[in-house]
Image 1 (tube, rainbow, N blue to C red):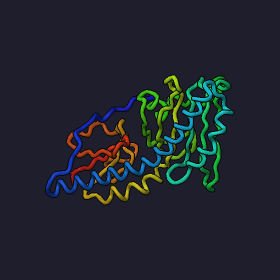
Image 2: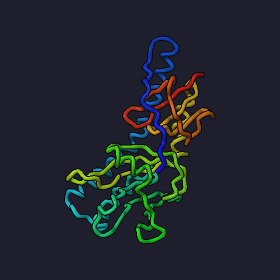
Image 3: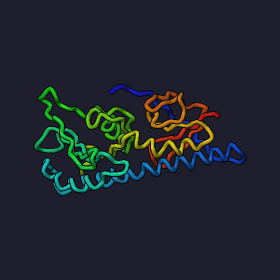
Length: 248
């Protein structure tokens, strides 16, 4: 996995009196609204995480068939921004297969289908998912993460975001990730109107410096930002994104 340059933790702009303070206050409201929007997706991820955690508490040596009882709940989470959702097991965590994704997706016609991959490490078509950011980042950080935008060659070939959270076994060992996919075009459809309402160009950036959505041609979705020094930065609530506003 290629290393990305982080953007550090710049000072967060706080509203003050006057026009500048009013603009900062408006930007903070937009940032918090975007955060609230993605919290609904993370809520679905959290429900999936809790369901898997409860299963692992009763089945310390689970097999793929045990995950079948979670499928209806996973499928019920699909809709709105969530186009894919499920549990991605750590290799070796299930006792009957070397790796596994209990993953469900919306079809273009509104139906639901499972994601079917070759997960046998002995074959040339083996899909090793452990190097993808949506798996590796929460595994290493121990907290929820947003990866992307990226072209999701594993699932849909769509430009996507993945929101993921680590799942742990009762003994505290890493068991995999619960995650949800969001098409970038769907996210932009709801986030960009709010960003365009700001008086200044703006973009959203994840903790690794990857631009998620933007209203300026100088920063396109997918670009890597190496520094936020001197820019106004606003937290998106507890979501691991920040809103950056540029000089008018």
